[in-house]
Length: 323
Image (cartoon, rainbow, N blue to C red):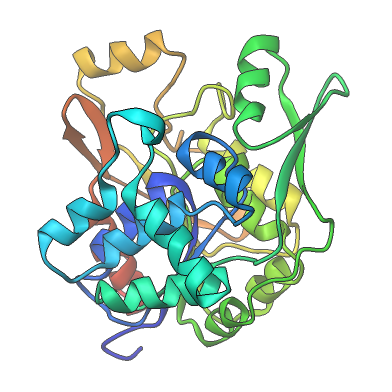
């Protein structure tokens, strides 16, 4: 494996941006492939009002990979506090404005990335107007990424499957190219049904990942997510990835084995979230080697992934130095 492995990280939400913050310390050959199914919050507002893809997760990844003055990064994250723009992110508005100037969402991302001296590249998984749906075990169909967890919480009914429309969303060609050239492909961390799996449902994405000779690594969330994966085990997360995209076969799975401090754990348990640990059962029948390790850091009373530890382990895997 060369000194700077080509790494493709696939996901969305805050989990992907945390991973990228660590990986950029070890390689410049980075590609983030980001879900564009978001329809809530400020991204959802821009999507509805301006008819462009949601920029929020893209913005987070750009900021994580930026190599510019801290003030510029703060500006990208700034949210207005008053008036009609209350809650809106300046970075989202900049991407929306650049989309209008350059005539396409991907061109806007390229120019913003260049302006902020991004390490590697950030790509939307598709330029199609992708909408996420969930079918629940009671037969209910819920449309919209932001509405799926809400229905799950209110009804108590488990998610049967998720799917996207248009049923054939075309992947960004650069995303396919990056997967074909990758040494390592990382899935997660992030929301299973609304950030990670939607990327795999875009046409040919699952097939290309499956056929890639790259090492494939899954990064488990540290806690379950109420409204999506409440009560799920580590193994159940992997089973759901396989069930939605059976052609993919993972090589390694990183999972936390460190106990969460009691006072912090109590807050999560009260919200319906539980720690995700590898329970010692063998998942080698899936062709996966689990790597239990301490992945945690505590940030303002919340459990987060330690992005340095996470990145170091992925780099070790890329070099064949698996612990």
